[in-house]
Length: 272
Image 1 (spheres, one colour):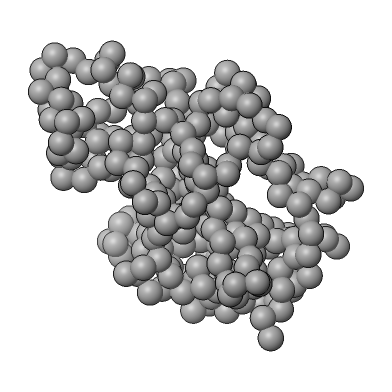
Image 2: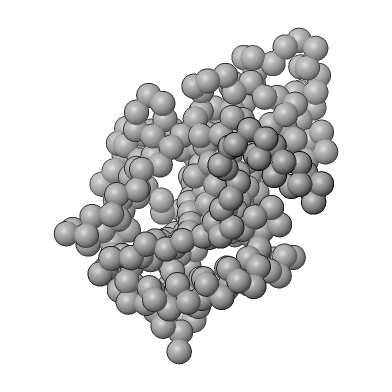
């Protein structure tokens, strides 16, 4: 790693390219009622001591405001909680619960996923909305759709593209020489090492199929945050998502556009 960093520095000097100089890729933006806190979990899914101290201070500064946190890695992905077994990353999840953060978004996993986490003691439960917003990537993590667990860690969840849509795509585009492997995968979940490797073995994500993008609208006057989900053809419809629990809002049907509305009530809390 040090050799590569040294080489990159030499190349920047050689070609006078002013990039790679950012030393602290984390920041915060505040107004009187909303706070946006963006942290960098790096490659190892953790904060170093400096960023951890900054994050705690930023959360303190955000108390009483509706707070959205952006991370590099999602706290839930592929239908699994990512903190158990990884204490530094799990500790970050605990920190956000401690400050009662209502909205967390991350990328890294190349698809769209949503989780409504309910936590806390009976009679005093809190809700944290988790969004995986990585569907604009060069390839898609089709392992999410094909290996979704029968018992996800939360009751309310959704993801895009759906299992049926992914299977239809691969049924149509898998070449003859790969069809035995595709049959083996579908019939026995016999992944070629891991579900994520399917993105390489069956990478038929010819643009613009299955790409997705989220728009976040902070509407202070209406005291709400609206999150709208797009494909390259416009707003996705609820019928395009695979979901469980109570995800689709009341009064909405399969043909209505996907829109998550989170009231800006309360705000992050001082844990003291």
